[in-house]
Amino acid sequence: MTHIRIGSRGSQLALWQSRWVAGELEKRGFATTITVIKTTGDKITGVPLSQVGTKGLFTKELEEALLADEIDIAVHSLKDMPTELPEGLELAATPVREDARDAMIGSTMEGLKKGARVGTSSLRRTAQLRQARPDVVIESVRGNLDTRLRKLDEGQYDAILLAAAGLKRLGWAERIAELLPVEVMCPAVGQGALAIEARVGGGEESAAVQACRALEDAATRAAVTAERAVLAALGGGCQVPIGAHAVVTGDRLDLRAVVVAPEGKSVPLVCLMSGAVSEAAALGQAAAEELLQAGADDILEAVYGA
Image (cartoon, one colour):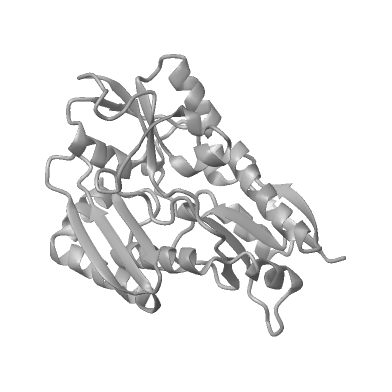
Protein backbone atom coordinates (compact mmCIF):
# COMPACT_ATOMS: atom_id res chain seq x y z
CA MET A 1 0.00 0.00 0.00
CA THR A 2 1.36 3.39 -1.00
CA HIS A 3 1.96 5.69 1.95
CA ILE A 4 1.41 9.45 1.52
CA ARG A 5 2.94 11.89 4.01
CA ILE A 6 0.77 15.00 4.43
CA GLY A 7 2.07 18.29 5.80
CA SER A 8 -0.30 20.60 7.67
CA ARG A 9 -0.39 23.61 9.91
CA GLY A 10 -1.53 22.85 13.43
CA SER A 11 -4.69 24.94 13.69
CA GLN A 12 -8.04 23.26 14.16
CA LEU A 13 -9.13 24.30 10.66
CA ALA A 14 -5.86 23.29 8.99
CA LEU A 15 -6.05 19.86 10.60
CA TRP A 16 -9.69 19.46 9.53
CA GLN A 17 -8.65 20.23 5.96
CA SER A 18 -5.70 17.82 6.04
CA ARG A 19 -7.79 15.07 7.63
CA TRP A 20 -10.42 15.56 4.93
CA VAL A 21 -7.76 15.10 2.24
CA ALA A 22 -6.36 12.09 4.11
CA GLY A 23 -9.83 10.54 4.28
CA GLU A 24 -10.38 11.03 0.55
CA LEU A 25 -7.01 9.43 -0.22
CA GLU A 26 -7.68 6.52 2.14
CA LYS A 27 -10.98 5.88 0.33
CA ARG A 28 -8.85 5.37 -2.76
CA GLY A 29 -6.61 2.81 -1.08
CA PHE A 30 -3.72 4.94 0.18
CA ALA A 31 -2.24 4.98 3.67
CA THR A 32 -1.63 8.47 5.11
CA THR A 33 0.06 10.24 8.00
CA ILE A 34 -0.16 13.93 8.90
CA THR A 35 2.85 15.91 10.08
CA VAL A 36 2.18 19.26 11.77
CA ILE A 37 4.56 22.04 10.74
CA LYS A 38 4.58 25.47 12.39
CA THR A 39 4.75 28.36 9.93
CA THR A 40 5.98 31.93 10.31
CA GLY A 41 2.39 33.17 10.41
CA ASP A 42 1.66 30.82 13.32
CA LYS A 43 4.59 32.22 15.28
CA ILE A 44 3.76 35.91 14.77
CA THR A 45 0.55 36.43 16.70
CA GLY A 46 0.74 39.93 18.17
CA VAL A 47 0.92 41.92 14.94
CA PRO A 48 -1.79 42.48 12.29
CA LEU A 49 -0.96 40.37 9.24
CA SER A 50 -1.08 43.42 6.99
CA GLN A 51 1.90 44.82 8.90
CA VAL A 52 4.05 41.70 8.66
CA GLY A 53 4.53 42.06 4.91
CA THR A 54 5.97 38.63 4.18
CA LYS A 55 4.61 36.50 1.35
CA GLY A 56 4.10 32.86 2.15
CA LEU A 57 3.47 33.52 5.85
CA PHE A 58 1.47 30.31 6.18
CA THR A 59 3.12 28.23 3.44
CA LYS A 60 6.91 28.71 3.45
CA GLU A 61 7.85 26.08 6.02
CA LEU A 62 5.49 23.53 4.49
CA GLU A 63 7.05 24.15 1.08
CA GLU A 64 10.53 23.73 2.54
CA ALA A 65 9.46 20.36 3.95
CA LEU A 66 8.14 19.37 0.51
CA LEU A 67 11.38 20.30 -1.22
CA ALA A 68 13.37 18.43 1.43
CA ASP A 69 11.25 15.30 0.79
CA GLU A 70 10.07 15.28 4.40
CA ILE A 71 6.42 15.20 3.22
CA ASP A 72 4.77 14.19 -0.06
CA ILE A 73 2.00 16.79 -0.19
CA ALA A 74 1.04 19.94 1.71
CA VAL A 75 -2.55 20.99 2.30
CA HIS A 76 -3.19 24.73 2.40
CA SER A 77 -6.05 27.19 2.41
CA LEU A 78 -5.62 28.44 -1.15
CA LYS A 79 -6.04 32.07 -0.10
CA ASP A 80 -2.78 31.77 1.87
CA MET A 81 -0.75 30.72 -1.18
CA PRO A 82 1.35 33.28 -3.08
CA THR A 83 0.61 33.37 -6.81
CA GLU A 84 4.18 32.26 -7.59
CA LEU A 85 5.18 28.85 -6.26
CA PRO A 86 8.79 27.87 -5.51
CA GLU A 87 10.61 26.11 -8.32
CA GLY A 88 10.01 22.38 -8.16
CA LEU A 89 6.52 22.62 -6.64
CA GLU A 90 3.07 22.64 -8.23
CA LEU A 91 -0.57 23.03 -7.32
CA ALA A 92 -1.46 19.38 -7.81
CA ALA A 93 -5.17 19.64 -7.02
CA THR A 94 -7.92 22.06 -6.05
CA PRO A 95 -10.80 20.06 -4.51
CA VAL A 96 -14.39 21.29 -4.67
CA ARG A 97 -14.74 24.70 -3.07
CA GLU A 98 -16.72 25.56 0.05
CA ASP A 99 -18.65 28.84 0.39
CA ALA A 100 -16.30 31.67 -0.63
CA ARG A 101 -18.19 34.44 1.16
CA ASP A 102 -17.32 36.36 4.32
CA ALA A 103 -19.54 36.05 7.36
CA MET A 104 -20.60 38.38 10.16
CA ILE A 105 -20.53 36.77 13.61
CA GLY A 106 -22.26 38.42 16.57
CA SER A 107 -24.41 40.78 14.52
CA THR A 108 -25.66 41.43 11.04
CA MET A 109 -24.19 44.37 9.15
CA GLU A 110 -27.41 46.34 9.53
CA GLY A 111 -27.72 45.38 13.19
CA LEU A 112 -24.41 46.96 14.19
CA LYS A 113 -24.90 50.00 16.42
CA LYS A 114 -22.99 53.20 15.74
CA GLY A 115 -19.55 52.87 17.33
CA ALA A 116 -19.76 49.07 17.52
CA ARG A 117 -16.39 47.30 17.77
CA VAL A 118 -15.81 44.94 14.85
CA GLY A 119 -12.81 42.63 14.80
CA THR A 120 -10.80 41.76 11.69
CA SER A 121 -7.10 41.64 10.84
CA SER A 122 -7.70 41.81 7.08
CA LEU A 123 -7.06 45.01 5.13
CA ARG A 124 -9.49 43.78 2.48
CA ARG A 125 -12.30 43.31 4.99
CA THR A 126 -11.43 46.53 6.81
CA ALA A 127 -11.57 48.60 3.62
CA GLN A 128 -14.92 47.18 2.50
CA LEU A 129 -16.40 47.38 6.00
CA ARG A 130 -15.52 51.08 6.11
CA GLN A 131 -17.45 51.51 2.88
CA ALA A 132 -20.51 49.69 4.23
CA ARG A 133 -20.42 51.00 7.81
CA PRO A 134 -18.13 54.03 8.25
CA ASP A 135 -19.64 54.60 11.71
CA VAL A 136 -18.23 51.46 13.38
CA VAL A 137 -14.85 51.01 15.08
CA ILE A 138 -12.61 48.39 13.48
CA GLU A 139 -10.14 46.63 15.76
CA SER A 140 -7.50 44.01 14.97
CA VAL A 141 -8.17 40.42 15.97
CA ARG A 142 -5.67 37.59 15.47
CA GLY A 143 -5.73 33.92 16.32
CA ASN A 144 -7.33 30.74 15.06
CA LEU A 145 -11.08 30.54 14.52
CA ASP A 146 -11.81 29.21 18.00
CA THR A 147 -9.63 31.94 19.55
CA ARG A 148 -11.43 34.69 17.63
CA LEU A 149 -14.84 33.29 18.57
CA ARG A 150 -13.78 33.12 22.23
CA LYS A 151 -12.68 36.79 22.15
CA LEU A 152 -16.08 37.71 20.70
CA ASP A 153 -17.88 35.69 23.37
CA GLU A 154 -15.82 37.41 26.08
CA GLY A 155 -17.17 40.77 24.89
CA GLN A 156 -13.94 42.12 23.39
CA TYR A 157 -15.87 42.81 20.16
CA ASP A 158 -19.49 43.38 19.20
CA ALA A 159 -18.97 41.40 16.00
CA ILE A 160 -16.18 39.81 14.01
CA LEU A 161 -15.70 39.06 10.32
CA LEU A 162 -14.59 35.57 9.30
CA ALA A 163 -14.55 33.37 6.21
CA ALA A 164 -17.74 31.34 6.05
CA ALA A 165 -15.87 28.28 4.76
CA GLY A 166 -13.90 27.67 7.94
CA LEU A 167 -16.97 28.01 10.12
CA LYS A 168 -18.91 25.58 7.96
CA ARG A 169 -16.09 23.05 7.83
CA LEU A 170 -15.71 23.04 11.60
CA GLY A 171 -19.45 22.71 12.21
CA TRP A 172 -19.95 26.26 13.47
CA ALA A 173 -22.31 27.51 10.75
CA GLU A 174 -24.93 28.32 13.40
CA ARG A 175 -22.62 31.10 14.64
CA ILE A 176 -23.06 32.98 11.36
CA ALA A 177 -25.32 36.02 11.78
CA GLU A 178 -25.11 37.01 8.11
CA LEU A 179 -23.43 35.79 4.95
CA LEU A 180 -22.26 38.94 3.20
CA PRO A 181 -23.06 39.31 -0.51
CA VAL A 182 -19.96 39.55 -2.69
CA GLU A 183 -21.21 42.96 -3.84
CA VAL A 184 -20.76 44.20 -0.26
CA MET A 185 -17.71 42.18 0.77
CA CYS A 186 -15.78 40.74 -2.17
CA PRO A 187 -13.91 37.66 -0.88
CA ALA A 188 -10.17 37.12 -0.85
CA VAL A 189 -8.62 35.40 -3.84
CA GLY A 190 -9.08 31.65 -3.42
CA GLN A 191 -11.18 31.97 -0.27
CA GLY A 192 -13.05 28.78 0.56
CA ALA A 193 -10.81 26.62 -1.65
CA LEU A 194 -8.19 24.08 -0.62
CA ALA A 195 -4.83 23.68 -2.31
CA ILE A 196 -2.86 20.45 -2.46
CA GLU A 197 0.76 21.26 -3.23
CA ALA A 198 3.30 18.66 -4.33
CA ARG A 199 6.73 18.27 -5.90
CA VAL A 200 6.89 18.36 -9.67
CA GLY A 201 7.78 14.92 -10.99
CA GLY A 202 10.95 14.66 -13.05
CA GLY A 203 9.23 12.26 -15.43
CA GLU A 204 6.48 9.94 -14.37
CA GLU A 205 4.23 11.46 -11.73
CA SER A 206 4.61 10.19 -8.19
CA ALA A 207 1.90 8.03 -6.72
CA ALA A 208 1.05 10.88 -4.33
CA VAL A 209 0.49 13.36 -7.15
CA GLN A 210 -1.53 10.85 -9.18
CA ALA A 211 -3.71 10.20 -6.13
CA CYS A 212 -4.29 13.90 -5.57
CA ARG A 213 -5.32 14.46 -9.19
CA ALA A 214 -8.46 12.46 -8.40
CA LEU A 215 -9.50 15.18 -5.92
CA GLU A 216 -9.38 17.91 -8.58
CA ASP A 217 -12.56 19.92 -9.23
CA ALA A 218 -12.47 21.57 -12.65
CA ALA A 219 -14.87 24.41 -11.81
CA THR A 220 -12.90 25.32 -8.69
CA ARG A 221 -9.64 25.27 -10.66
CA ALA A 222 -11.03 27.62 -13.30
CA ALA A 223 -12.46 30.02 -10.72
CA VAL A 224 -9.30 30.27 -8.65
CA THR A 225 -7.16 30.51 -11.79
CA ALA A 226 -9.04 33.66 -12.76
CA GLU A 227 -8.87 35.08 -9.24
CA ARG A 228 -5.16 34.34 -8.84
CA ALA A 229 -4.47 35.93 -12.22
CA VAL A 230 -5.99 39.16 -10.89
CA LEU A 231 -3.75 39.05 -7.83
CA ALA A 232 -0.63 38.19 -9.82
CA ALA A 233 -1.17 41.01 -12.31
CA LEU A 234 -1.79 43.52 -9.52
CA GLY A 235 1.36 42.37 -7.74
CA GLY A 236 -0.47 41.75 -4.50
CA GLY A 237 -0.03 39.24 -1.72
CA CYS A 238 -2.76 37.71 0.41
CA GLN A 239 -2.81 40.67 2.86
CA VAL A 240 -3.80 43.54 0.57
CA PRO A 241 -7.16 45.29 -0.09
CA ILE A 242 -7.83 43.20 -3.20
CA GLY A 243 -10.86 40.97 -3.61
CA ALA A 244 -11.78 38.62 -6.43
CA HIS A 245 -14.62 36.16 -6.85
CA ALA A 246 -15.28 33.95 -9.86
CA VAL A 247 -18.30 31.74 -10.52
CA VAL A 248 -18.36 29.00 -13.14
CA THR A 249 -21.66 28.09 -14.80
CA GLY A 250 -21.25 25.48 -17.53
CA ASP A 251 -18.57 26.81 -19.87
CA ARG A 252 -18.99 30.42 -18.70
CA LEU A 253 -16.99 32.23 -16.02
CA ASP A 254 -18.14 35.43 -14.32
CA LEU A 255 -15.51 37.38 -12.39
CA ARG A 256 -15.77 40.28 -9.94
CA ALA A 257 -12.54 41.99 -8.87
CA VAL A 258 -12.15 44.95 -6.52
CA VAL A 259 -9.42 47.16 -5.11
CA VAL A 260 -10.41 49.28 -2.11
CA ALA A 261 -8.50 52.09 -0.42
CA PRO A 262 -7.90 50.97 3.20
CA GLU A 263 -9.25 54.19 4.73
CA GLY A 264 -12.52 53.62 2.86
CA LYS A 265 -12.90 57.26 1.86
CA SER A 266 -12.76 56.78 -1.90
CA VAL A 267 -15.14 54.75 -4.02
CA PRO A 268 -13.94 51.12 -4.48
CA LEU A 269 -12.64 50.19 -7.91
CA VAL A 270 -14.79 47.35 -9.27
CA CYS A 271 -14.37 45.33 -12.45
CA LEU A 272 -16.79 42.72 -13.82
CA MET A 273 -15.61 40.30 -16.51
CA SER A 274 -17.31 37.37 -18.23
CA GLY A 275 -16.06 34.86 -20.75
CA ALA A 276 -15.23 31.26 -21.51
CA VAL A 277 -13.93 29.03 -18.73
CA SER A 278 -10.99 28.19 -20.99
CA GLU A 279 -9.95 31.86 -20.83
CA ALA A 280 -9.91 32.02 -17.02
CA ALA A 281 -6.34 33.32 -16.68
CA ALA A 282 -6.80 35.86 -19.48
CA LEU A 283 -10.02 37.16 -17.87
CA GLY A 284 -8.19 37.67 -14.59
CA GLN A 285 -5.36 39.46 -16.34
CA ALA A 286 -7.79 41.71 -18.22
CA ALA A 287 -9.67 42.56 -15.02
CA ALA A 288 -6.43 43.55 -13.31
CA GLU A 289 -5.42 45.73 -16.25
CA GLU A 290 -8.78 47.51 -16.15
CA LEU A 291 -8.39 48.12 -12.41
CA LEU A 292 -4.86 49.47 -12.90
CA GLN A 293 -6.10 51.86 -15.58
CA ALA A 294 -8.77 53.04 -13.14
CA GLY A 295 -6.16 53.89 -10.49
CA ALA A 296 -5.56 50.68 -8.55
CA ASP A 297 -1.79 51.19 -8.77
CA ASP A 298 -2.09 54.39 -6.69
CA ILE A 299 -4.05 52.59 -3.97
CA LEU A 300 -1.66 49.63 -3.87
CA GLU A 301 1.42 51.85 -3.91
CA ALA A 302 0.08 53.70 -0.88
CA VAL A 303 -0.53 50.37 0.90
CA TYR A 304 2.92 48.96 0.12
CA GLY A 305 4.61 52.22 1.05
CA ALA A 306 2.85 52.48 4.37
